Image 1: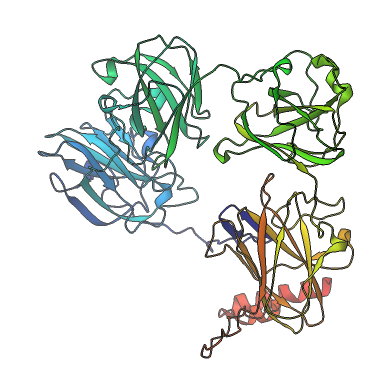
Image 2 (image 1 turned 180 degrees about the vertical axis):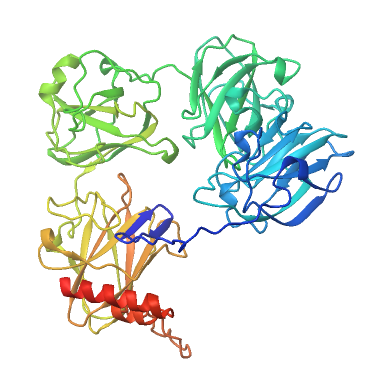
Length: 624
């Protein structure tokens, strides 16, 4: 089975599990020489300091040792000498499990009486961390593994160095000024950020990777502060201005499962705002946003924004901070989904002609994507309805699948149509979207039966579009996912050979699949030998497969995400073919032939194990 995500395709093998087991007694490792606190390896004073050839294999937790060090910790002593400020401790070199290593920095003279300075947290590259240290201080370093039950330990080298490349606004005192006028959007990063003395527990305490901003409130109006480019392992906090971080008062802070907060500032007061990434090594670039919470002007049905009475129509909108008024149509009306709706905004459009149009209001910001719901209602000329009467006048054809932010609507010239854009109640989110109206015009090859012919030669190319395309009721999902707007092509293989399908000149995340068969509901998918991104673009895809002479193949091109449409170019090529003027090209390596169970057994060197394997293979053959 092949699974595809934006920008990357990964092969997933199902139905097989590989288990490595030790025969007889488990392997026992001798305890490392620095397994106990009292036998810590001394490191050179100051920085740089390094020591090689260490391991946590065979390590244990001694009596009185805190649980956080890991059950197989080993120890080092280090004197900072004249060094102060930020240092980096790196135990990644020679480390076979960099993501499962945990570093701790301590002060103290006994294993049961240590004070923790900080630790490396959890996640990728947890084998390195930055720490803030004082000069002329003796520190204790422990290195352990997070899950020795599945990972008995690892070999590593350790190195200490001065760290000078953190974010400029890493510290509370160096907060970056923003605003004060709203809205505010500032790009920053917590990568390389550190905790500092007095770091609030709400930001992660001594494992926080925080950066700081300074903002003076221009009014007393409520604001939202968010950093929602990453929805997990991020927190946002608001604090008072004080002489030090330890003396500041925490006014509001989010848990690590949320990325935004709302608070009411005092006009003219300056606040410190922190964004912290808990996971190692921190958050890559994010945008800090500070916005007022006043609802949009078209928050209420009675204040619907009037769209131009033309076709096409395109207008940017936003339902951030929108509310829901009493008696609004239910989710079964808005988007055809059995759920309540939230944060609705409204538009009114007069149809210039009697025709079928497509009306959409789909999210446009991938960092704030949400499940949008679209409702369309017809009004008679000069008719005044209440919001509670709209459900009886709903029009349009729901797609029956996501995205629920689009509808095909038969409109009558001169009639008014009310358009409602809302959020799914399960998400209760909001964000920018684009209202679009255009004459409905599906591609000629929207359906399987009308697949565009590509002939029976190589190479072959075609251009296409999935704008206004649909999914037929009997269309199957591909192994690596489903699409919502698909078009079809057909091609007959002139010979048995390797063929590559390329969809590389494309501006949206595309999902191609390869099929054989004559009925859309009973097709057989051809699993490609390889499925990769295009070297020339982020969105494209290419699949290599073995074609059989005389077989007709169907290529389905669809979107990889709910609301992606656009134009694309399709190419079928022989990857072994030489370009004009090129010399001989080496053939593409083919996968080795699949060995039978019996053949696999014969490759086992151990006579005893080979005999046991052959006996098992013989039994399995009889069952068949």
